[in-house]
Amino acid sequence: MNLAWIVDNLPRIAELTLAHAVLALVPLVVSVVVSVPVGWWAHKKRWLKQVVLSGSGVLYALPSLAVFIIAPIILGTMILDPINVMVALSLYGIALLVRTAVDAFESVGRNTRDDAVAIGHSKSQIFWRVALPLAGPPLLAGARVVSASTLSLVSVGALIGVPSLGYFFTDGYQRAFLTEIWVGIIGTVLLAVVFDAVLVILGRLLLPWVRVLDRTKA
Image (cartoon, rainbow, N blue to C red; front, side, top):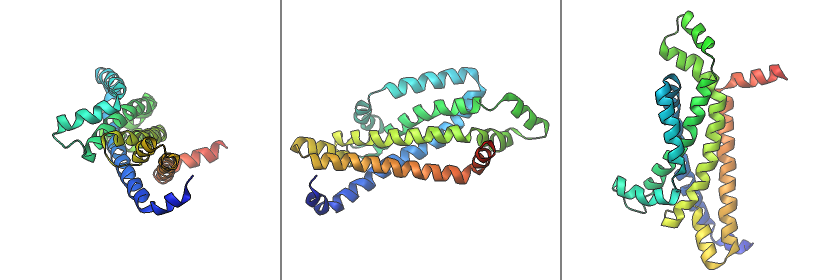
């Protein structure tokens, strides 16, 4: 490990780390915002559930590099525009998380929903006050998986010239310079740890009743 090179290139490392984080954060947020309502609707309608689950499986099977290249043609953007990577990763994130969302809402028993109706809850109140809170833990777990997957896939964008920590993989490989490769690997792993820690903290803030239940079981 060439520490002198790392010190000399700290501004560039910080710049690409920030770019990597942004490229991952936007798709993660989009995945959650889209997957939760789609998963709710799909779980309520059997035909839509089959379409969503089948479609998500096909979508996630598409090669990421091919999607990055095709995206500019569909969106009318430049090949190096970061939005191509964000859109592609959003699709992958939705494909992953929507399946979790369907399963999470399926885990909320019909008796629980019937009880909510019996005490006068409207459809929107059942979603916000009953279904979503109970489905929260598996949704959080799914979001953590999407976070790790997205941060990993961002690096592939470097193959088409989109700036991220993946640049250190490609440049280090071409120059046979292991320090660059290690910087890319360690930087990506550290970002994954940070993202995961933030999600865990958000989970504790937004789902405080889960901690209470855990302490009760203990």
